[in-house]
Image (cartoon, rainbow, N blue to C red; front, side):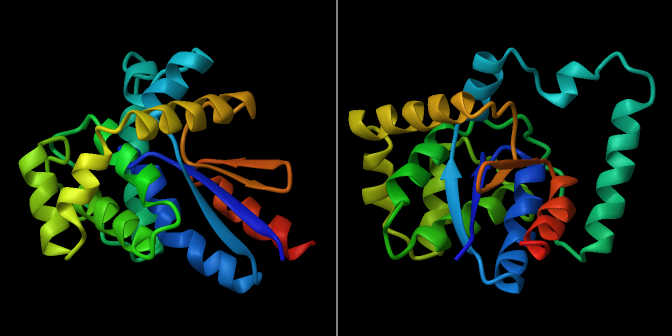
Length: 199
């Protein structure tokens, strides 16, 4: 069975789009989807990259086009999406939670709940009170998750996964791999789908 590795950060709206569309691509090709939480700020620092908002701030028309492109993409794929007015959101706690969730029977639920809170409900997901409310409403183990985000081994694991991502030449999110073939961004989803169809 082919495996799709999906590197993401909850603070990336394009990662949210990939999260929504990758399961259908995986089912179509009978592939296993493996999620890989990373810290995007760490990726930018270690790869000498910058966020698009920062990198293209002075490029005339670029950010306006990106907004239009996102609007068309959302409409085409019939996605629920609302730009988060609290952006940028510090996601380090959420990403530590994602590391802790790996292998738990609620891992998939945690990932979906946090992504939706960020990019459908547009909540301030770097506020511990808001995070706790979101987890409680989803009937996830609030105390367990929040305590885990402060564990040294969880903090170290997130750093290690981010370092490993940079070692694979990952420079942003979302990034997907099939075998050693890299696909980046929401634009990479169509190429990934085609690649799998040729296997």
